Image (tube, rainbow, N blue to C red; front, side):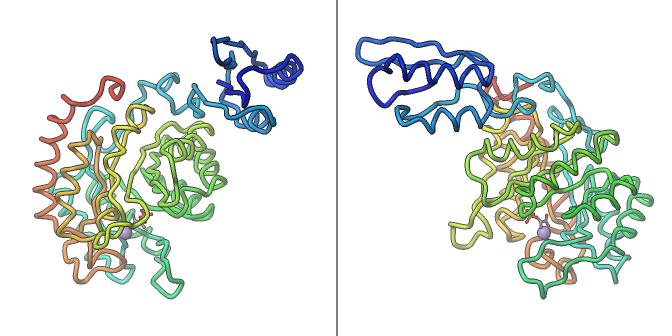
Length: 351
Ligand code: PEP
Ligand code: MN
């Protein structure tokens, strides 16, 4: 919808609009009110280039989008009833729990295996374990490719599906070749559009799940959804959206909890939402409540850092990992809350 700067466009201004519209295969329909006129765009108005051209005209005040800028992620897309499998759960519908170490210590395989068996016992559906880590300081432990073997062995021995983060093409290729079940794209990489495309390209025929975190630098939720669109546009629709806290503004929390955007995401897209309360609140004692909140907001799952001995962990585990017994309680409680929350989901958020 085009709102002109003045109450009504002149004939030559309207002609200029129409010329641009025809370049993009759309039409302009004037709607004349008593005081003002507005100009509807008839046809596919998702092109950002079209909107930029129109907004660049000196006689246009603004252009309001009516259609969502994402075609594949939107609820109008053919993918609206798509389901994603995590362990033996189907999302949306079921509730999944992904749990395990922030970081796998390559020197302590036994500890990761102990956690792996313990999270399985606690009722988790998928095992997480960081092989390569995005660390704020280049002097912190950056992860180790050897940990991929430990993660694969844990899958072999527990029978659990596995999730790990990839940050570049080389890591991506290694994980796809090893048939890692779910690739995590972290908050720092969520704005790396080339990586998102490569993830989509390399996984279009494998069905690999992709857990896409929300970058703390993303603004409106449409920016998050468009990042997912990059992956889906390459042919892999198995994307889960993961709010994980945004820029820290609440002293005491690692990031600002954003599990409440679950409802917005679910109204606007069909993709399952798996919330990460660990990185959101960033402190083990706050994590259980944040998990319950996520389930209450209608999330389809949670990603929780869990460690059999957090004090001996590396990366985030000493401060924010919960123990397997706490995880077991969270699994029981969130499943109940998820069932209750389903009653309150807005109609537009159900597929
Ligand atoms: C993680 O899951 O350990 C991680 C680094 O997450 P994020 O990308 O959300 O910071
Ligand atoms: Mn972590």
